[in-house]
Image (tube, rainbow over all chains, first blue to last red; front, side):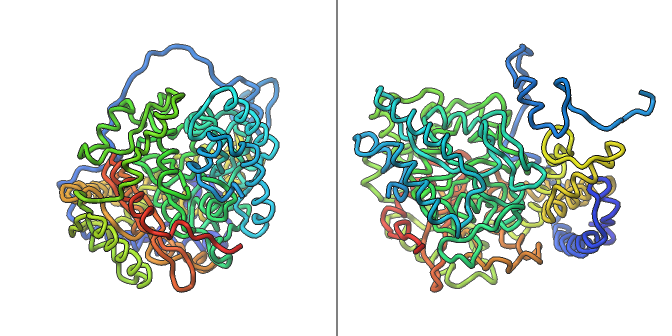
Length: 98
Length: 517
């Protein structure tokens, strides 16, 4: 499968947007290397003529008519937000120009 | 002691006016008060709302409403949304979250008159096999409180086994209903993928997740399945067949269709119609004559506990005595299931859990920009097992590794599914153990994730293939821990596995055993 079953935990954790402590990074490094080594066994199989299964059931897209309908009201949605004002969710500044 | 009874027993008592729903709820609450201090199954309890709903159910019944779930209290795994109740998925990142809506399965049960008592513990975001990854508490196995209840629906199984609930709802992504049911001596049903809408079920791995019941009897699982099944426009993967067509699909052989799934949208007002769900013929006749049951050699794995193997082999012999023909079948790619499962499930989880970023709900740790906010929030909000799986899932999907891991796993998934297609040409259902060992001790496997993953070897193939599986009590170890028999059925063949499970259960005494608490 891969040349080396080694994962760069710090790099991947950053992709996943999780700040890991040094201790966690070290712990996960060992555990994930071990898990990746285990999954190497899938390389034993010849799957060149096998179609991938993304879903157990054969599904086709079904289009519905785009008609307006009731949804949760604003209050219900913002009630769970960590920070909200005037019916909107507050977030840190994204663009320095504004 | 109404809390010790089954849904169908209570439904009969209510129908005959021999008890009220308020009395049932009070007995369940009393049991929780006396036992949950030790078992730790419940995260939160909605006492007043439960009693209010029970009063309403009693009023509705007095006014002529009937139904097998009218006035029956249920415990709900903390990842299914019930309007007005918390839904934390046993994670700090969702602490304080209150559901603004009902999951479709919940809405259907509510319509049928069920009562939602409270939220029960689970592995954080359903990632785990022992309920030890919960951020909030350690649930204990009622049969031996030093042992785990299994997971991820450990709270659901523990509360049913301890009679702290009449029945419970769980979810099964790789065995999370069947395994805790086996560890706690309950019945657990993982329905065919698409049988029950997943709308309102917090997503872990969307191509594998399925809601299902954990109950005291097979019949109770059938009652809950009937109430929850059916197409929902909010979940495009739920069956687009109408329930009657599903019945036809469930009937490989006309003689075996004894559990019709009636249209759940149409609330049955006719008592005879509801009782028809389990025809008297089915209840009295436990013959398995004419059924072929497959025994896969690959499911009696090396290192399996001899007591588990013996109990399952005894159960197979029992089914033979009931008239079933036992045939050898082979599922040659079973040994790859764990590797495939932990690639596919973590890949899907890494995408599904991206929504927990501290913006719209739950925990937020502020940062100078969104990226810092996400990183800090997710670091503080997720526990180790969830972080580990998100990182693994992100890795297998990342550029350069996708083909080697994710795509290859999907291809091997096809081989695993094909194994079942071949096997079901030879049999109506497959008999197997649920787990290689009975429940282990709390803390025994927490430091070795791979070791814990390997225990899912007998349950994950069913999810990968999208088919259905049932766990039924079939014995006890010498140490007094329950052992489960797994009955696996083809897609939409719930009728077959429920029939076998019911016949086995009703001609054995295992399900009648209660833990000493």
